[in-house]
Image (cartoon, rainbow, N blue to C red):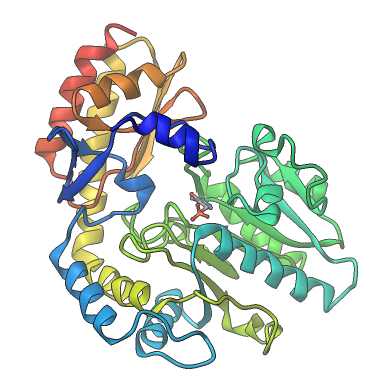
Length: 391
Ligand SMILES: *Cc1c(COP(=O)(O)O)cnc(C)c1O
């Protein structure tokens, strides 16, 4: 099959796809149409945390689809109510809006913050986000995303977003005013190059938001749900946001997003404030309930430990290879920053049956499923050790 030609003829050309056609997966592995096997260190971009074709998820999806796959949000469904209760409880005193994607989860948070702000003062609608952030591709979330190359061609953006410097509290103070309704932060920037917020910065930001009557929204779409070894990434920082957004791994590979808001402000949304036809789809919610039940404290501890091991092995690589500028990570989101463009590494990995990816041109990113073991990590490290000499 000439997939490249099919894409050119029938699909809008927004993705630079690799010429690989996957036909099935199992556990940590994906298989292409030529029978070639790939070890997956990307998880469909932080989605498939329990690998491919997980039997528990298959069963949950199958059972729910036998009953119905959709009824609309004019009615209650069992899986949606149970999932909302579970997420609200994990957050602690919250209320949930379910949608279909990360961008939608953030869109809901942005609308919520604006409604909350303008109810107090008609000019309290500005939101501060951070350089190299990524919040999605809808107009509002794109406007929140402080990456110029993604804005090209879409002006005018929603102009009420102000961009502060990541890890720089003074830059937030400079932008913050009586017009500010919220700060929107990724505690670890995934698309931004696996950049980790400092503990002090996050604590001060949380304090500042409280002092100035500003909502703190954390976008945990990539790093929430156990990726860092704790359920929420903010659990590492000893703070709690007013709103948190989740998506990527939530639906077990089915499209699902969640916006969780603190009980104390939840009254801001009432009938008609927001909505979605497909949001909280019963099949996606059934899968999510299983994802959450499999994501127990034992699994979180495992992610934390295996992540530490992975990071220590990457640090060893750094000692041997001058091309590595920096190594960083928490749990199973890890990045290796090179002193040069890293795209060649992705291709070399793919040729040799490893799926990884690169963000910000020079940061190799690893987002393996939570079932990864030392054996697979050792295999990847050995391969990287060999090819890095050529870079
Ligand atoms: C992927 C991602 C989004 C957007 O999610 P979509 O499901 O692609 O809309 C938003 N924020 C962060 C941090 C993400 O990683």
